[in-house]
Length: 370
Ligand SMILES: Cc1ncc(COP(=O)(O)O)c(C=O)c1O
Image (cartoon, rainbow, N blue to C red; front, top):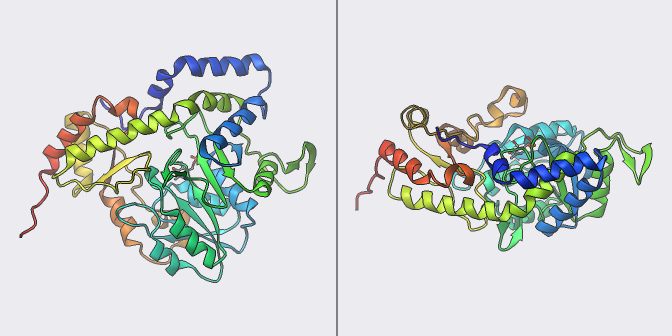
């Protein structure tokens, strides 16, 4: 069976470095906010070209704390794409604000700028720009829209570690950016982890306090009501060991995506937008009869696939109260998309087999009449 993703294979690939990192923490006698967290924060910020990184416990908390640290809270409306992980919108609620769902573009699967402009209202205070599937959203265009309306922009980079636009890394465009290190991510740990990245020292300082009971400047005094959103030493040490391999892994994903494009050309498969800065956290195609094709791939060819995501957030019970209109592109993509295996440790030897099986199921592209 070819799984859709298997983070344990990446850990196996870097096993010696990961075990050395774990041993260093065990022998270091420092388990919370010690030297590994600080070193990882510096290394990760440096790799992105950002000034500050604050390690936290998850991508969801990273978004919530970034929103709180930029002054977003009760009474504020935050625009989020309908097609994203639940954590994106859960974080808005966690910050005390209200999510407003916006449709995405069919080709990029990221926020549609025209829909954003149409959704901005009197209470809109921020946009969470999700670089879905590792595709970098057009940040200059989005920032231009935000600047006219004085909106805060938080980048959700949970699926886009190392993605770039014209040589500039995503996560360095908005007021702040949130990363997740969930095990399947392009940079993932052995548990939960996340980070807020920003070039604004005041935002970084607030997030640092908010992740640790609201304590500031080493004083055990809660200036603000923070929680416990700390990244732990063990995860930070593992991330430090894996960070040097991120670029190579992203390069392998790009080659696999190119191979899928070549082998699926002229088939009835719909391909995702092609962008040189994408890091292909997912390679999500579209097909007719999606569920049947997934079933046959699994049962007859032993190929596991995923769907990211099969229910847009505005159609999920937890967020239904914030849904005010149909969002047809997100709804269509949720019906048609299939995430093919793209993790290098899973797909490197299997990409041609997967593409051939898919081609045999969907057939050739329909020729348009001349
Ligand atoms: C786009 C996006 N945003 C937010 C999150 C939430 O991250 P975490 O699971 O680390 O809380 C995820 C992870 O699933 C994600 O993919």
